Amino acid sequence: MKDNKPKRLCEIVDAPKFMLPWLDRFYEPLEIRILEKFTRSFRDEPTDADRFLTIAGLLPDQLERFFLRGILSKDHDGRLSCADFHTRYDIWALFEGFKDIPHDIRDRLNQWELNHYICGHKKDVEQIRQTGLLDPSRILPRYLQLKEAIKVLDEAAHIYLWPCNCRSMIQACKSSVYTCLRFDNSQGQGFEVSREKAKEIVLTANKNGLMQSGELGWNKAGKLVGAICNCCPDCCFPHLLAKELKAEKIWPKSLAVADWRKGECSFCGLCAKRCPFGAFEYDKKNKEKNARMRFNKEPCRGCGLCAVTCPKKAIELKKIKEISC
Image (cartoon, rainbow, N blue to C red; front, side, top):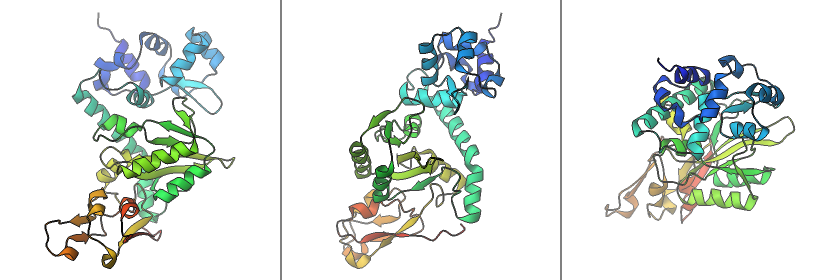
């Protein structure tokens, strides 16, 4: 008799159908049995923890493990619901890895997750195209200058270090994954770091060629929420979305552009080496020193990697006006 359990689990958590043969790599037998007791409506109809424990027959410590592993989600009132496969995949990629699934399945899973991210933000991108402005009610990505990122860390009440989920999933570069600084720890998986340590992480990331971006907001109590990301163009979901939707200037939102003062340049080529977007071109073999460098303003996104390491301070980031794109 055909076993329909994987198919039912796939429907409960909204996993893609191609993951049917691999779901046992993501869910333990006990987790599968518990989730099978509930219908998909459990995701839309949260229940309190005591009732869930009674129905599921779990102990409190087992319940906490379900939450930490992304099997269950909690709302603001502490009520529980079944987490979808996006939530489970996020935790799995961050802390468990890809060793149990083939590379082609990993690639399909990453594309599925990227498509989900793109679909979730298409309206935001279109809104920015039309107005040139970030919606203040939404926590959306924007580039931060290094000094801005440090200033944000001074405002945070608590800072938690998480692995970067983009880099943990995509794995297209060799940069460290331990670069995501979040300002809340509702999932309980990050660990708190001091303000000094957080600044050290940002400075090291910048030195290693990672851009700083912020997804920042303030809750009703005036507390800073969101995160500072240390991004690369190869793995970062916002950058991959920008490429897909041709939204390079607005996602993450550019707030500045580089101003290269040729007369002050030593033509060392460091900016060209640092720029992730090819705004600077450097021809070391050119015998004319002042012709070795070219700057194209168009691909510049104002990440600031060039300016912070220019030995002659010949590059300055200038704010751009908030105009329609």
